Length: 173
Image (cartoon, rainbow, N blue to C red):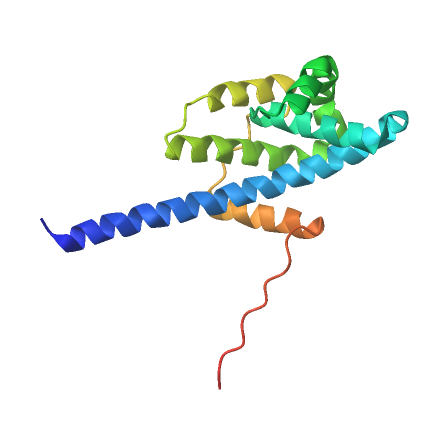
């Protein structure tokens, strides 16, 4: 057996894991922007219910959109109790957050690709289908290339103060 081949295979797998992790961090930035915007929207629409309600509802909406279930009893019960409101808010995303449709479409597709690459159960197709039904997934938009996705994430994240501008490190003289 060629040890060099084994090392390269290990290095390739390590690089793939790091690359997927970087893409997942980009997805998380888009998710955080959506959460912030949704929370603020909900606080404006339901001021009588308070900040905690808006935060929990925004989290439940985000989880529903990305096909994530919070296993903690409090959050699962909240999502179940507010299922119709969650569905209503998701149906209104295209109208209320039109400017986020491209980042959400790209993040959902990258989420699917990362899950597929990681060999996770392929529930992501159902997530994409639901997002399409809500009018959130822009079908006519081509799937993003990783570099373009990360550049978009950087711009959006920077605009919301979630990403700080990187300055090149000073080179020793």
